[in-house]
Image 1: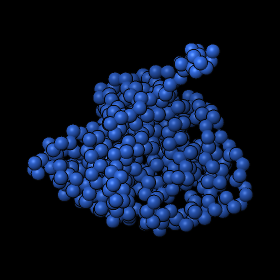
Image 2 (image 1 turned 90 degrees about the vertical axis):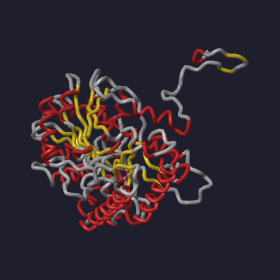
Image 3 (image 1 turned 180 degrees about the vertical axis):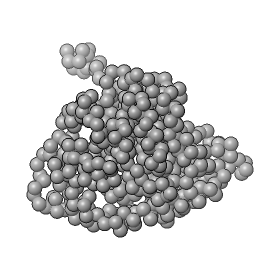
Image 4 (image 1 turned 90 degrees about the horizontal axis):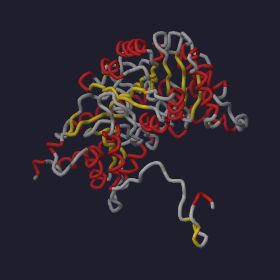
Amino acid sequence: MENGGTNVNGVNKTWRFKGKEDGHNNGGCTVIAKAENTNTNGTKNTSRGVTVREARTMIMENLNPHDERPMLALAHGDPSIFPCFRTCRNAEAAVVDALSSGQFNSYGTAVGLLPARKAVAEYLSRELPYDLSANDVVLTLGCTQAIDIALTSLASPGANVLLPRPGYPYYEVFSAHIGLETRHFDLVPKNGWEVDLDAIEALADANTVAMVIVNPGNPCGNVFTYNHLQKVAEVAKKLGILVISDEVYGHLTFGSNPFVPMGVFGNIVPVITVGSLSKRWIVPGWRLGWLVTNDTHGILQKYGVMESIKRIASISADPASFIQGAVPQILENTSKEFFSRVINILKNDADICYEKVQEIPCLICPYKPEGSMFVMVKLDLSQLDGIIDDIDFCIKLAKEEKMIILPGVTMGAKNWLRITFALEPTALEDGLERLKAFCQRHATTNK
C-alpha cells in the first residue's frame, strides 16, 4: 500500500506528507504576529517570522474591493512602476545588445560568467583601498540568493548569527529554514540607528559565526559613518566573527553621511558583501545580484568558507546568462546624471514623508531618513481609539484607505511602522494624506 495509507474502495485515507507552515487567518494577523517571537536577551530563537512579501500579501487581503481609488503601496522598495524612476537607457540597451548578440543563450557557470564577475570586482574596487578580483565574486539571483548562500555557508550545527533589530526579516526567515540560530542586537534610534556595540559582545558566544549589518539601512533609512563601521569591524575581529554587509541600497544616500562600503575594513575583519543591480538601477525584476568576499588576509579561504560558498553556488540556480552578459556595459557606462536624478527624487520624497509625518500626532519619527527608501515611525497607541497594535493599524488602514504600510513587528519592532517613500511624489503625498485622514478618524480626541 503506497504511503502506508488504508485503501478503502481505492481511496488512500492517510498520507505521510504535510506542509511545514501553518495557514494564516484573520487577515494575516496570526502569521504576522509570529514575527514578534524574537529573543531579547540572547536566548535561542527559532521563530519562522514572515518575509516582506508575505506580510504585504496578507495586508492586501484586507483591501476594500469597492473602493475605486488607486491602491497605494508604501510597503516595499520597488518604485520601478513609476515613470520618474525608470532605469537608464544604457542599462536597457545593454540587455538588448546582450540578448540580440546570440552569445548568451547557454548555461552560465556556477559562480557566474567571468566578464560579469570581473566587471563587478572593478566596480566595487573603486571605493576600496585594495583591488578585488573576479575570484572574489559570485553572481546570484538578486541579493536574496546572495543572502541564502552566505548564511548557508555558515550554518554548521549549533552555530548562531547576530541580526539587527529592527532588521530586514528575510535573514530571520531563511535562517530558520536552514536551522541557523539567530540572536538580535538593537539599532538605537536616538543615535541615528547605530549598532548597539555593547549588545554585540553580550550576545556573542563560542558558537557565533557572523553578524549582519544593512547599510544604507532597511528598514531605518540610516547611513552608518566611517567611524562607526570601523568600530563594528573591530568588535567583530575581537569576537572572531565575520561581517555580512547587506549593501543592496549602496550609494542611495542623500543626507550628511556618505555611503562607505564595509569592505573598506576587510583588512581588519573578513567581510561578505551582498548587493545587486536592483535598487541603484531600479531593476529588481532583472534578478542580478552578487556575493563578494572582502578578506585581504585570506581568512575565509583558510577556514573553508570560500569552498563552502562555491559548493553551495554550484547547486543553486544562477542569473539569466543574457543579464550577466549585460553587466559590464551597465556598470561601466551608466551616467552620473542618472544616479543624481534618482538621488534627487529620493531626497525630495524623504523630505515630503518626514514633513507630513510630523503633522500626524500619533506618529513619532525619531530620525529623518538619509538613505535607502524607508523610514521607521513609532505608533503612539494612546492617541488612537480602537487600534490594538501595529498589525491592527495596518489592516484597518488597508480596509479604509486602500493603502499598504508594513507593520513594524515584521521587522522585529512591535508598534512601529515601516513606510516606503520611494514613490512618484504626487502618489506619495496622496498616500500620506490618506494616512493622516485615517489617524484623525481614529484619534482619541474624536471620541
